[in-house]
Image 1: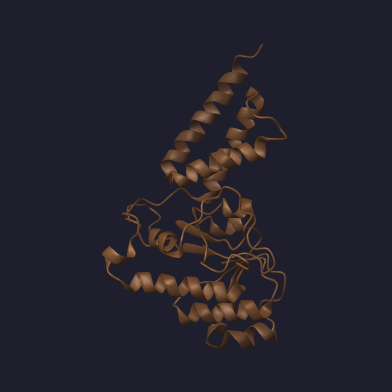
Image 2 (image 1 turned 90 degrees about the vertical axis):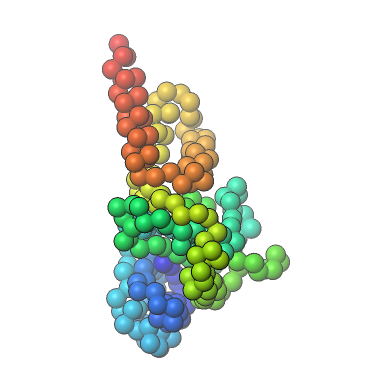
Length: 243
């Protein structure tokens, strides 16, 4: 999944990599160029059919909503407090689903950002795990297609190993969908603003910390539904008791 890619050569190269590593779908979030241009098609080589079938969506939240696990890639130094994992840790988690979720047949997403500035912190927070490739500190950002190649190779390597060598984490249920978690946090923000716990100018930063906490906990769909129900009931109770 590429967010706002600007270079047709990169898009074509990524389509070719998808064909190399058996990736069945490419999603493009608000591409800033013609992904079906002659340049892109020439670079895609045997990935042309996949490129022609690429799904174009307007934003990242829409792109990942049906995905059961999402891993973002970060090559920036200014990622704030967002925890970064090695490719082995993050991709091992992708492979560690226990299959108990009703969405166990849903796809997983590997998300890569813009060529010039990668994924924003708010976009990284939509991902349940964030990986960082071990490049040099003086110039950590890789070319987009090169980063995709490294990550897909690492995923294929882990997937070809035994269960003992590929699963960094024990098997676990899939987390809640990004859109459900975002909706819950939006409701909680409204409630906490109304109750006076949050202020308008600091609400975004404070709720980002709450999202980080829930992402680290790998909160599940039924847990998000419970939290959202509690928030809505509290908001109703506050308004019902006002004179």
